[in-house]
Image (cartoon, rainbow over all chains, first blue to last red; front, side, top):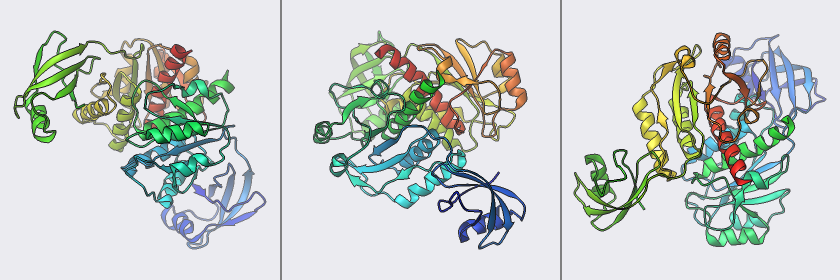
Length: 240
Length: 240
């Protein structure tokens, strides 16, 4: 069944009008006609079954026939603060895979060794929406505007806070520090790693140094491994 | 330090001559000169420290000054048999990430629902070599030629055997079926999943049905999640 991302829909709605772009896509591209069923997701866990009532190419009207207001999400909040990769394909790839596997919030952080210092938030949002639809999830990760590392670590952040770096020092494995279902923020550095000053600043602010193993991972791989590990800890816990 | 992949090197060698392509790269591109140190890896866990003795652009001579014949690899053998994705970028991406995280053998399998039925093995080999060098690992995963699903499941395969599919049926989580350090072969299906006949054939041959969680993962994401899970089971085990 075709899936539409409609962030404005609310559980009390009995009908919904697709915006001009989605209407055109539904009627001209997908050739949906009156009576056909579709699904709407709001990105916050809500999933709606709807029937095309008026296949208007600019303002298609859908009648809501069933609502599941809150689909089960994982019971933790995972926030990945990642230095945007020099090659944006790698960042977009991370976002796609993380959306599939499960992530709640992503903040691009500009670091001392960052080669890239700007990020097109709109483009990342589109990648996340496409990945959410592809993986048939009802949750859209929140992609925040880019922020400087120094400002980010000063923020109040819920749950445990980690810094994954490649420098020497006392580090435990991420999977041994995070408990099942625990919320976390994980800092992932740029291609040239965090600077010593950044690592020190994060530790002073209470971030726990961590690693994913002895291998050297690219920025986007490390960030995805964090998402897979959080997911895995959770399913192992609920599954046992 | 610059890293060269030299599969022909042996621990008893005291010198090594780079082939024409690598010599050109070393001397013309990297501008290495006599006396400079480089590292050689053989893809089988051997890591050699060498000094440029003669910076010849066609047959550069390296003097071996230190040998670590067998670098620690993970103690399991993980074999991913994956339906090549329609878009080869996705397959190459998987190979790059799996090489970083750790995988031993990859076999492209042609399935009933495969849209792609040919794979350029040489191209995949190059991607794996680049990822191995990038991640500074000394192990190169073996990339096998593509084979039909039916022929593959009839093979003798060491360790536990799994089929990860999206169809209904009794399935346990992969991380609950695999024990730390255990070797495994995991079948990962194409975009349209395995056919019912394929799932039945695999189960008859002793493959265990498995899943990575309730979310729908793309082919290449599922394959990478299998690699991360095997790695994580192992480090959690040795780390505890």
